[in-house]
Image (tube, rainbow, N blue to C red; front, side, top):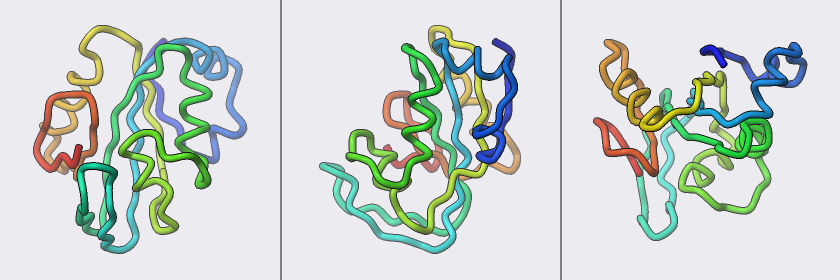
Length: 136
């Protein structure tokens, strides 16, 4: 799989090569816009303040990207991952999904690239080492 970037609208009507990619393991980054500042309880981590702005969540789906991405895009879901607390907010919206090939350490590599970007958004991640602005 090559690097791909999709908007949510494109995810619903994607071309066959992308459909094929969604059936395979891979990594992804969700670009999330939060319209208003929110204070929310994030499981056992407790309360967290999320300023309005853009966030990035990087994850992996080793049994196939499609089901995982559809789940992240759904507003109604059982809370399973820390990111679910943010994604179920009415003011949080996934605006873009970036797909990466699967590989050892890929999530960490992508988070380092995001952290090094001059216009770095706030970052969310649960399984990779912390980076600046991370809220587990």
